Image (cartoon, rainbow, N blue to C red; front, side):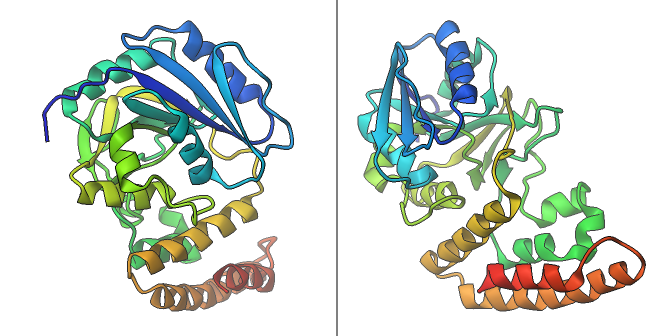
Length: 300
């Protein structure tokens, strides 16, 4: 792999569903910013109940059926003219030098899947760089008794977060979160794009695993930073359903024993029931039975 990359042009692809306000604000900053290479802008309206308006300088592609994140991005990639595609969630906040900074620094590291450092609006890291999933990671996330350790270095490491990925660091990782992701267009097309069987979650892991097999690794670029709201407008139980379903699809595709994963998490839910029962008896305003029903429902 070359140590430098020729990023000759960029196609920015923004999937849209819901209120267009955030995407419009993001586009306004990007279009008013600076870039050392030609940039074109594509918004993929994924059959949104509120249509994305026609916007000067933006190609709006309108899907007739909602297909989820990977399907929407594939639609944008097929229309992209840039040598690289920059996939951005609509709820990102960026500086007016973001595109220029990203191109300058990503070009130093060869053709890779590149993500900047992503933080919440309060400044906390969203742990963009991660290790490939495992049943152990899911178990640690699932167990209520371990929630007290959330936020510790042990917990982050146990759920697959790569602790080397901090502001200022540049680290090759297993995979990067898809909120802001620079992709070499032809490599992605050659790999078949995102697998559209994933509706939401795990599609970027699957793609990066296939790309790594073809010699295109993932890179955390901590010298560039963006802020991300992160699913604030979506029902938490629905988000969790998407996540669990996608994890089982991923395990099945990569022959990682989804039946075992399911059994381990069912056992963890029973442990959670005991833990939550004790919390309920102690006066916590929770229902151990309701939580158990919800968790087992997610695992069916």
